[in-house]
Length: 148
Image (cartoon, rainbow, N blue to C red; front, side):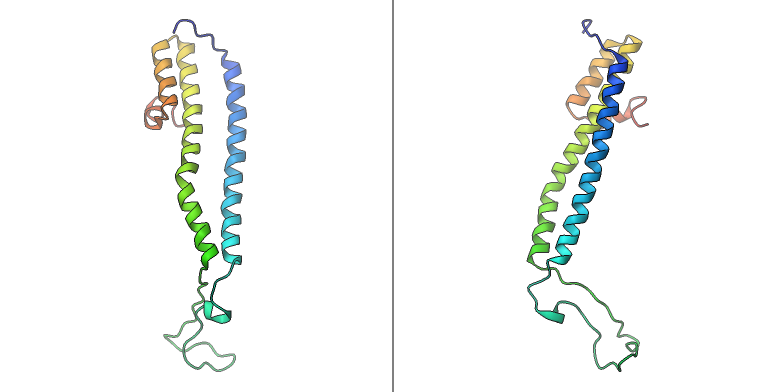
């Protein structure tokens, strides 16, 4: 391990780039979630007309509020498209989380390894590098400077 030649300023520059890209990815995922939700809502149902929602029960005079116990509850029924989109997101959630975990592990590992390198502790630097490679976020977070 004595052959390491790290340029801390270069690492810092790369981490800024990664941080910016991670922020862009977060925005893209947020946009995806919003778009999927809107698509699910707009897709409608297989139920025709007003049968897809619950209206007031019993007779209600025009312009009058429903009687006590007959609160108007409008719930949109979900159709097959909405169900499929929900299933897609449920199946992909672990993959999205894995991407997030790997980015965090890389950043924390690079910071920790570089700091240890600067201090001359190459064994600790190697441990941080190995933890990042193994996506061991708990080990990286517990080290000093892990959660800033």
